Image (cartoon, rainbow, N blue to C red; front, side):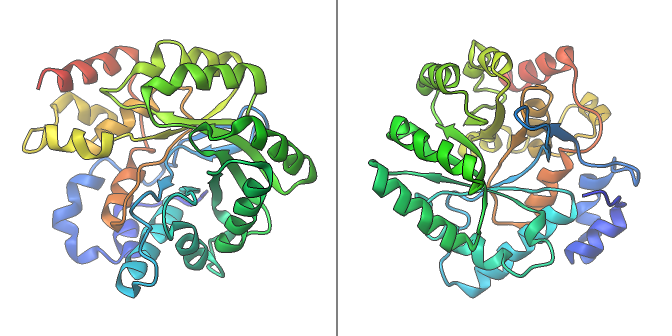
Length: 309
């Protein structure tokens, strides 16, 4: 994570040097002295890179060797450009197993920050499911265990607190993906004080700015952001449209970087976890974690530009 890269280094390590002319815009503002932005987990002050990887749908490939090989490259690119967080769940088909098999015995295995979830009701069912996740992901200790969509959270919180105290997990958290869940997330943050909260947030989906982020600030909660591209809707809305010239001042050279840098310009965002199964998209996403971040005035300029397309 402390390594510095220029454009040639990145193309070489990614095996994409032959596509240099195609990829040039992606790296045109990349400075050899740049390093990926890091932000603190408030409960520990541990630093995390601001761009990670979600695995919903994208890592549910089971034993497909061609797809697994490509996903190995995705993980390789993320690690080489300083990314760490990989987020999965028992809900995501074979994703936990694929993450475990693709990272096990790799040079970067212990560089990653492993996050998964419990997604069932009942104490024993939850324990069994989480133990299975440990086995599938080939981890003796999990960095982050989250309660998926707040399912039976009052039961699972007791287990997670116990596991954290025993060192089985480093952090625990709660998740959801809808605007309507934000009030309940706030209540749980206030009453239970989780280390992390994961929720939806994007340039055109800003409900969390009403009060959720203020609660996060007050209770010093780390954040993982899901649905940053609104399941692709933002790309469909901007297809064929030019990125505004002024966005280049912030190292923005793709719509993906535009959307991610808007999110990251909110200082209460710890890490964004866009999902992808394509190495060049992983590289593009990681680029959003480098360079200058938009200020408050530019954030609104970015929002209004997209809103009025």
